[in-house]
Length: 126
Image (cartoon, rainbow, N blue to C red; front, side, top):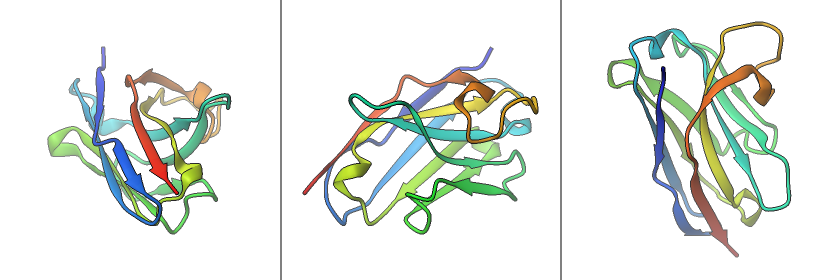
């Protein structure tokens, strides 16, 4: 069993920065790819970023590339999302998720993730 707890959301002005954290329980954390997704009101959940278990490979949605950075600290069982140059369209609930490890779904597909956090709200004002 894996539990994921996000923190760090809040209200920020456009152009500002926020850093999200996701603390994971479970000794197998370090062996799985971890991802961040977000869901805005009335929209589907969308992929934001992912990082492989050894941290060497990172993946980003085009909409956040160059502005967001994903990182992980396996010793602390924590994955981070550093967000800068935030835009009002980044407003959403952000979710941390653990990839199930299979190859059925591409890494950007939420269906490939088997554990999710409760989400943290990020609001960017214009």
